[in-house]
Amino acid sequence: KFQSEVPILGCRGNHESSGTVFKKYYPYPYVSSFYFSFDYGPAHVTVIDQYTSYSTGSTQYNWIVNDLSNSGKKWKFVVLHEPGWTAGGGHSNNTSVQNYLQPLFKQYGVDIVFGGHNHYYARCVVEDIQHLTTGGGGAPLYSPDTGSQYLVASSSTYHHCEIDIQGNQLSYVARNSSGSIIDTFTLTDNSDPQPPVAQFTGTP
Image 1 (tube, rainbow, N blue to C red):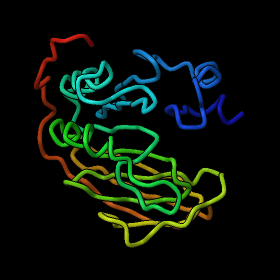
Image 2: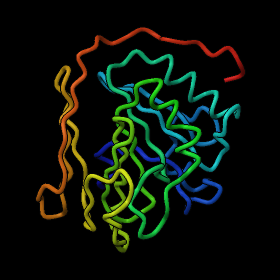
Image 3: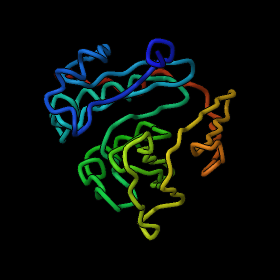
Image 4: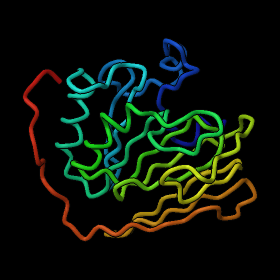
């Protein structure tokens, strides 16, 4: 019933195998494999498939460059499964995200990267980009390592995240299952939405 009434956005994870069942129940408008993007109000959302190559020069990498560079939205979000920066205690940082994607996130003004994989909440801030691990949806919880690099908040709790955008300001709150706030931050972007800043002419 919940799924029939509430929009759900997801990306393929390490338990989806080939993704056949995932695609059956989540028939998103995939560009190829399991990556796609969409606009929602003032935000652009890029969904990355980490189980299809996204190394420099790959088809998905070129698509990510084209997708991010051609969005003029004020706010840019990325959704992926394995975080580039997280808090250990289960799975380590994904170095492919660090090496291949973080430079693109910085270049094209990504504000927040949403990941999962580790069963807890964590937020790392790298080059002013918020890297969230929001893996507290119901599976047995892990214990985050509070000494992890770039970590500014963590909680071994079931939780959800809320985003409210009002013009130039983005307000973010993460709450545990009892409704208590476990993390909060605000972002301000006083720039005007921009037209596409680059064009990629290779194979999309």
